[in-house]
Image 1 (cartoon, rainbow, N blue to C red):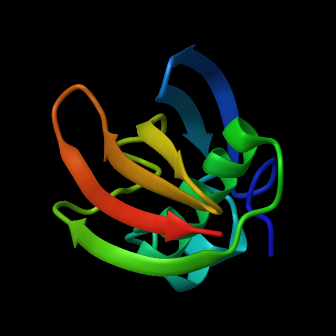
Image 2 (cartoon, helix red, strand yellow):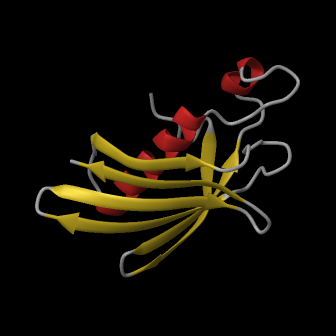
Length: 120
């Protein structure tokens, strides 16, 4: 299930060689937040992982399949109320038929997640 333009929208993007930074806006009214958790919405880790994948697809211009999550660290809760516009910073490198993605999800005050992923 794609989350772009429903769970989140891309507000802005900058690209420099292999570094790609996306400012996104989370949709606090999405049904996922009603369930996770009622009255205290927190972005599920699986949604963060999916957003990184979708943003990587934007960069490479084709569908990607996650083949390995080398390292995934969730460091602080990402909420649509306290941090409605996080930044996703992606470093993407191609090696043969695989794409190596290092991502950091943050705002001005907190780092919410750091991920090292491999896509095919």
